[in-house]
Length: 295
Ligand SMILES: O=C(O)CCC(=O)C(=O)O
Ligand SMILES: [Fe+2]
Image 1 (cartoon, rainbow, N blue to C red):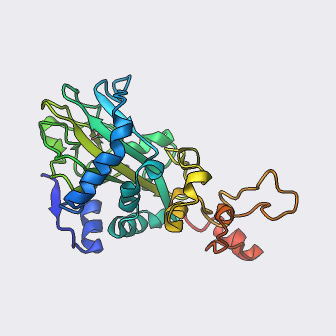
Image 2 (image 1 turned 180 degrees about the vertical axis):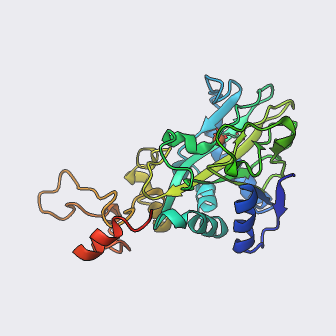
């Protein structure tokens, strides 16, 4: 079947159609070589400690570096990529009124790594979210080339529609082979996993995932990028990270030192002096009505 490769100027509707059919696709050559160099340099201080995984899932030859919004200005640009954000919004919107950044990680698969167990990322929520609700739009930005030999992500196109008990045959597993600067998009419901690395160099990808604003984020964005750092970021990015409300009350906060009632039960946007929150308290009737609007 193969993984479809789309051009960077593809229409959003086309991307969504392919996602619906396959739940995985590649958009070729999006990041410039200058951008790739910057990302490598920004990540180098954190990858150099050589800290590897300590179990079969995280991989004994694989390094993972998180907090990318705090650590890497160029990864911030990727997180705000307009095409990816439009795809995330449209893909997730049947089951939410907004989405958020859910996970950031640079994953370096080192030589000698064996293949990761095939899985669906939606498992992070323990299987409690009904399958009809799509919980995640995932991106993998190739910083090095991704090849079958060096550990390109394995994916089973179409497996988002499979019964839970069906396991893929070897010939149903495809590899997200792509050149550096391309982005692999997949959903939380498709079977996938890191590949084995038989080459003598690392395979480096930047993973940025998005989820509905009412689900708990896999990576805690407020601790990984605390207000002292977030204050200097693009307000759009802060909103995306969850320094905003997910709905009219979800995620409100109170400044514990405030005795004057300035930051009492307010949107986190107000920490940064931003008073423009799109979610406003509704009328009582609207509130009751919206509490059961989507089944
Ligand atoms: O490294 C990869 O290609 C995939 C990693 C992955 O799927 C995961 O850790 O959940
Ligand atoms: Fe995964």
